[in-house]
Image (tube, rainbow, N blue to C red):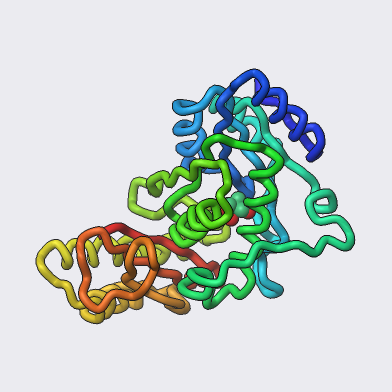
Length: 281
Ligand code: PAF
């Protein structure tokens, strides 16, 4: 039976008592509107821990002024049912007013890694992500925390925060879960119309093309990016390619010559929906 916890104090009490019982806590932080990607993280957590906690919190501090905070899909009832079926022990769904009470003023800022890729186009986004993840770790006290590789830059910066701040959490990255036709699972896919959904395939198709060309011997990042761009722009409802980059998987620095293990990342607007995806070469 999944238990819904709505206050920080109650969650803290539960974590403390679990620790005293020597239970290993696995944690899956989410913004809700759960899909198979999230559920794969839950599955990993359940295998490696005694107790699994999922947080559901649409974090206001990681959304920019003109972003989709208000319209971000929310359905707690549906999420609770999915958690129940997946065998989640606790869902922690705090109120924004408790997470960020009046006068709230402490944030986590990382001086590297956060100004590139998505960070370049979403100023302040990673400050919000790192702050809320830090707060959630403090409240839930997990042994292991699970994040999807779909938000690859997020995963890398969270790993770095944990290392830099000597936090007692093991951060685990889990593979991207895709629809049968290749589209990476995302809560934001809900925004897509039927026609946009077809054009959204351009992201994964371009990534698969880059991998194929690389495996055939192409190591020039410009050439790979040009081919990806051509393919993406051939889809009618693609409004804008925000970025395509091929980077070192740890430093996120752009590569001059592509090597095995590098990461290709991209952000594309399909209609008004901003989608991201990536692949390991
Ligand atoms: O990946 C997400 O859903 C969010 O960025 C996270 C990690 C839950 C923080 O709000």
